[in-house]
Image 1 (cartoon, helix red, strand yellow):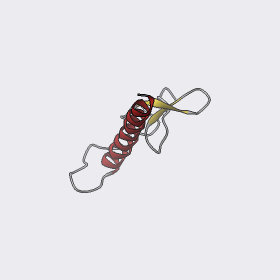
Image 2 (cartoon, one colour):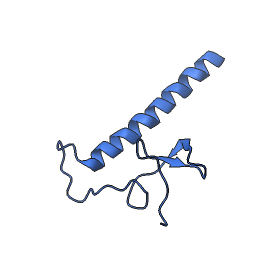
Image 3 (cartoon, rainbow, N blue to C red):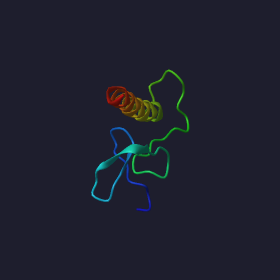
Image 4 (cartoon, helix red, strand yellow):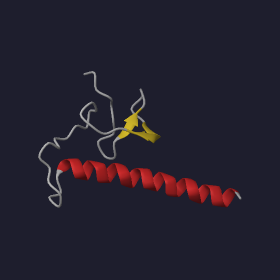
Length: 74
């Protein structure tokens, strides 16, 4: 399709075998998880906002886990 394959749950970029990459995220019209955001208004819970929130939660969880792992190694 010419679109970048991403996990619809959190927008992680998918490897060739369909496994989500732990650190790579992609949002926008050139991904397989496209959402219309042209007329999304604040405080409406629009699809584009939900997609961005899901990606942000996944990125923050990854960073939290990375931080905890670094502390345990010290």
